[in-house]
Length: 289
View (cartoon, rainbow, N blue to C red):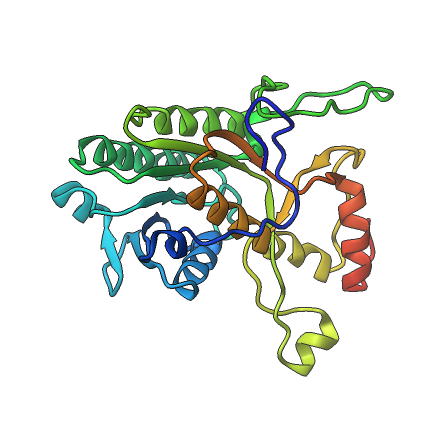
């Protein structure tokens, strides 16, 4: 990982020396949205190295506080806060309409505002606040047939404004309300997160189906039904990252005090939509329409 004035894309896997070992005591990390795909993987990694984790969730339970608790009692004393809370913008179980759009905005922007308020009001704030958003910040626009997609970094302006780009803009603006004179602020723009598909049964191995989280379950069903296709020309870039590398980046920015500002959490070799879809379909032994 490099400073903000260089090439900011984070390379594949990051080894993360545990700051708790250097400090002589475990860290206490508060994770907003810690029960999601990234949050649960991060919590597992933190616990495995001896840190303590408190998850902010909609439901109470061991090792958890609710958003209502945060409103009532403020932020518990901790060393770092990581915000991963938010409704997934692509939910195949939900109909895309104005109500769901508003729910997505509220789940990301308002929870971030709540966390920032608690951070700023804390008498003994954590050393670092890690806010997250999507690579959708850069937006999209129609390109000519002969035109190639430009390479974008953390200093690039959006190519065009669509709903995902507007959402990320509001999301990051809410996070920017944190008092950076008291708290180190790291902002991650996360690509499409990929993880392993568990196929434990014979049928699962035969039909290439199984349990997974993240992006793959959303796109896998059409391919399993023989309806998968490349989107448009297929030339659109698909910035991606594996869940193991995503967790490595989060551990890295928590542990390293020199990291601050914006980082694109994506693999260095960005593929196009076609370059991703065609081998994905071959792996599933399904056609591409």
